[in-house]
Image (cartoon, rainbow, N blue to C red; front, side, top):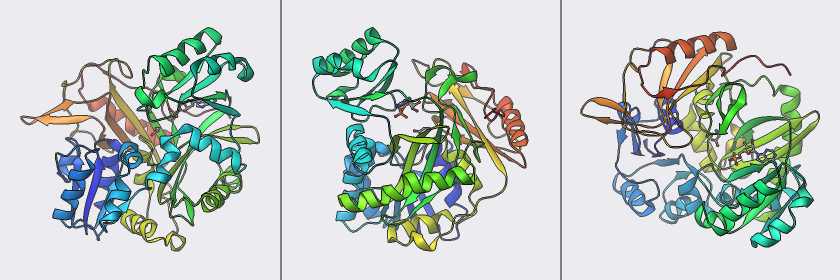
Length: 419
Ligand code: AMP
Ligand code: GLY
């Protein structure tokens, strides 16, 4: 098969790496890809939101399956465009991608279908939102309705902070049109986890749970990021918890999309908050998590291409996911300053010298045989081990081998936690 992957991060590098194991795969193209991906696949210089050019490329190359990594092309309707031309593509269509494209859409769905989530209200008018702030108590969670590159959620500690954030989002439009509508939501406490599932419209198959570290610095200090590291399996979600997740969140999701006439095929990423017996949905995403993918796929025993094909063909009920018993840890090496301003174009050395680990490229490019940083999150170093401690040790030993000035990483990814 000829496969076309859309995206340029560690997630797409990990997908590419995994499907290369499949005997079904003859050739992989990635648009636009990155320096690491270009070592294992052919990168094509097309922007990931240039649907027309992506479609023309897939037609010209007679691609058998296109796999979409990031949310923006999905929300923009790339799946509908490919399917209209009879091309096979993995990911939800435009209607289903609203689960990530609109916070208000998701909250309305959750409440109507009795799926537990924090109380909320949506607003089009900034003054009305400010007037009703007290109904939610503080801290209050303020969410720009649309996509905002992972930055659209603000937790305001008091009324003054909330007013400022609402004005910035709704009046100053710091997230552009994504802030035309906002959702105000009660603040939940507890432990967060991510559940990634394959969905074919009828069957929902959860993957082995991964734990993401969203804050920039050790001990969960500093600003929120896209994710500074992950490990799998989770210490938090055992079989009993997974059963609760299935009956309270996954089965009602399938029932809900049937009732609403939404054909969801692809990945459903469920962000949850667990406190005692309570499990609330914080958000849905409609694609693989990054860096969750970098610890999930290396543990998958199945042929990932077979799973992708089963999703597209609507026969996921015939698939049983199998996981390696090993633990996986991924440490993200980021540019100094991330998630705020950072430099790009810094030379990185030593990625080929690491042992007992895989270096996934999240934001890199090559120039005259040099490897250069090209983003906030730059590399994801993943190691497997028989125990969480072993995987952690190997990942950090590998991270230390990499010579990347003006970078930083957390040193507590995978630490044992007290439950
Ligand atoms: P997102 O950018 O949509 O992944 O959300 C960012 C983060 O905001 C989540 O990972 C949570 O840590 C936090 N968050 C979102 N909603 C709530 C909530 N209702 N209560 C507490 N934290 C929340
Ligand atoms: N790691 C969180 C995400 O992919 O949204």
